[in-house]
Length: 159
Image (tube, rainbow, N blue to C red; front, side):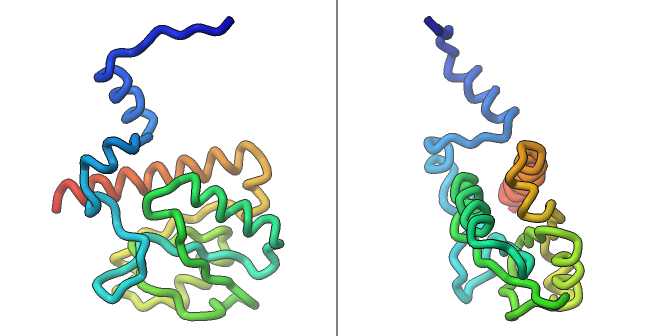
């Protein structure tokens, strides 16, 4: 039988904060403006945009979208931009972060975005989507996203 000792509420919150996990109760308590919105309205940029390669299979696209849904916050429902022949297929909306799945996608993004958008945004270079099929790829994605969440949290606190 597997038993665990109950943790005091303060200790549990300390451990969760150290792991970069925000519980649902804290999300509601901090307010809606704590993280950037994932809605693409005219009042400001979306929270993040996924920049995907052209040859990404339907299976890998579903996997990436499931991972983004699991991350929640500004990642759930993030719009996707596809890179074909080294160029973005459609213009991408202004965002506070761009998740580029591979170096070629990051280069295409850099060529297509205006300078003022690039300086205001965080561009996170990730592994190709195929890496999400392995534990190491998922771990690197989690680490990159945790850093981005921390940055969003710090900027929300200073505003």
